[in-house]
Amino acid sequence: MCTLNFIKKLAPFVILFVFFSSAYAQEIEVSGYVKLSGKKEKAGDILIEVKNKEDDVYTYTNDDGFYTITVNKRDTLVLGEWKYEKQEVVVKKRKHNIKLKPVVNDCDSEEMAELIDMLTHKLNEMERDWYEYKKPRPQRCPPCSCN
Image (cartoon, rainbow, N blue to C red; front, side, top):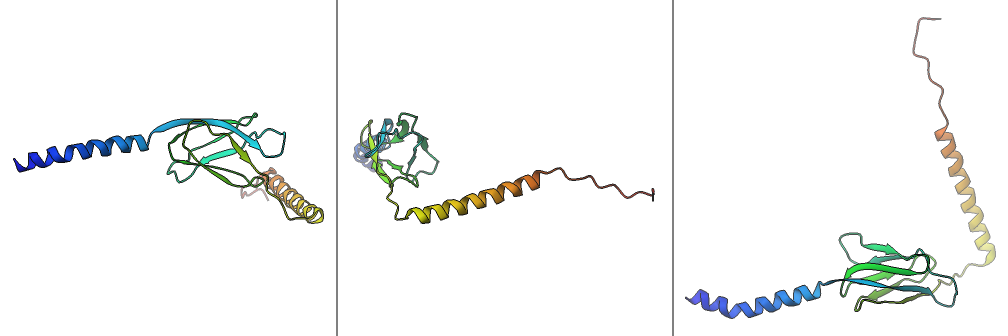
């Protein structure tokens, strides 16, 4: 009898917990446009990831900068690649338009030219190594008594 009374008293709290837990983890489809601040060019092929997910949840913007991704409310979208400042957006609604700022580099043109030359040299070395690796090798003659 005592156990039944305890369950009756606990039931409303369990129901509220289940209700709020399911509301918190509600999956929604979020969409919007990614635009580049101060530029007319479209933000195509920008990676959008969901932060702190066990599974890899990500998408890319299309050529017009439009994206759509299924996430939970209060998840965090992470944008920004090497040429854009990293930006984090907490999902609160179904539509999020995001502006990315380009990264300002402190390199001068001479440093950039040196870097490009070094990278080009490394790529050429890798290409030569690849072709050398892929070259057909002569077949070795098995040992025989033909000498």
